[in-house]
Length: 255
Length: 134
Image (cartoon, rainbow over all chains, first blue to last red):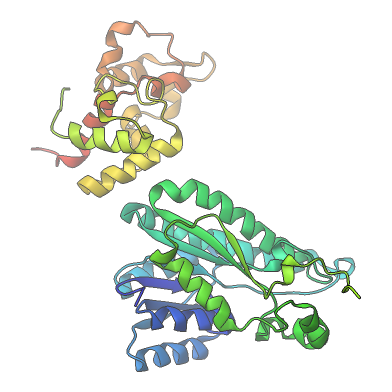
């Protein structure tokens, strides 16, 4: 097991991609703090599931868009699980709408949770990571941070900010033994993006070179790799898990 | 002050943070001007010292140590852009090497740290690592 004796904190860990990441990290022996904002029951269910499988896990409440709550989330993790080595910044929201109809609150709230959450949680771990000269931070971003999509200008901008922050943080924190990388899922059918994949489902699938949506386990597997010593020499990368979608020039097919 | 007890740990932290040889890190060398330390290097040194000695020193502590708790307005005169006599008296305690430099009435506040040496850092670490009264 690659994460034995390590402690990981996953923000927004109760559902979707975050849930799959918690399970995958626990499978590799990590103790896992499942952060949640509103999904208390699902978080506790996941903790019970991990413990039933022989793992160690706690559910920790906290809104990552609030700096003080991010600090207490990190302190609580260290107090309850005896340390912290991996931070997975996964919490995120969408408020899809056309820019023409977008209200200031629509982009500010998405920015505050998605990018603000990454910033607040990252900052909250630094004193601990720098003192122990060890830490892996994995930001769950999106291919939308590198490309555009109708109705997702706010989300796309927040993910682009995460990708830029990932590179700068990696450069700044490398000398303290901290690695920072981002995972960029393509279309992964979770509750959060059900609107997107349901509406354009079949048509989107056909255009993905690997001809399928991402499974949450595909995203989790890359996250575990970036958390583990297997990726010791990787930092500052933004790695897509998108079935080849973003590699392709999407203008139809040859005859 | 000529504390030497913690010199090895400080030399090692400074050398590693700056990526230079330990023998370049002499007690007399100034951290910023001569050794070329930048703010991120100072942060790196302090975290390395925290790890090797268990003494937690924050960047703000460094400034407080140099300023000796004197409020900004009493330490440096804003209109004249120089350190006040009270400020100079404090600096001569924590950075005694400046005594023969005749800086009175001439030292600009922003230049103070450029005179801060490896020995000054050792002295600071010593003051942090040694409980008061021993």
